[in-house]
Image (cartoon, rainbow over the protein chains, first blue to last red):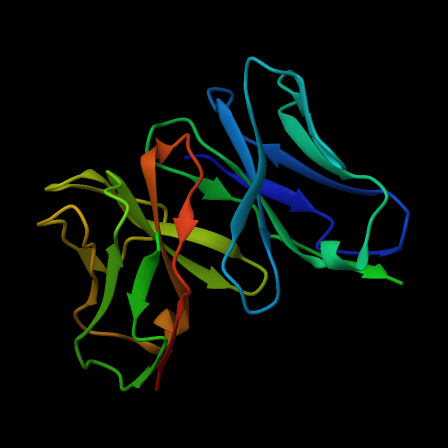
Amino acid sequence: GENVEQHPSTLSVQEGDSAVIKCTYSDSASNYFPWYKQELGKRPQLIIDIRSNVGEKKDQRIAVTLNKTAKHFSLHITETQPEDSAVYFCAATTSYGKLTFGQGTILTVHP
Amino acid sequence: EAQVTQNPRYLITVTGKKLTVTCSQNMNHEYMSWYRQDPGLGLRQIYYSMNVEVTDKGDVPEGYKVSRKEKRNFPLILESPSPNQTSLYFCASSPQGIYSPLHFGNGTRLTVT
């Protein structure tokens, strides 16, 4: 089955800096890669996603890039703010129903 | 208000005592799924359902059962809970499988002693 590795497990940045979280996947047939954000004590929420036929996608301060050859994808957050502090999960899927998540990254943005 | 409702929010039980965690959504979503969240392991999919009467195993189905008799409900059943099933459980739904945003419930924190 699919295996998704996420790094780093924790990331600490100063407000205004950029943050990058990387994920690798094992199944070359994976075709959809969402990112979820989970604030402390809350439920996960989708923040951005990308399909395998696209190399990059942006939404204001966040962007995701996909390298299918290397089987990795990354989340980029620019101009970080304290409210970006949360746990971020990447995920990958090859089928309509099965979704495999990474281990999560705890992002802390210091004011 | 569109939502996914899980009950209970917190549950403490003993090894071997059957329990059910309920999940209900009011958005007429076809797809529903269950995840468990453990520190350092992320979210792991237990079971999912593409529609009524259609269920499939996720990555960690052992020790769990589900049913989808009607569209809005997707209960998670632990026939004989064990301590290694102590975890935070999330139910989620979406209109079109995992290719559309998952709407998560508030979570159920289960402790098995």
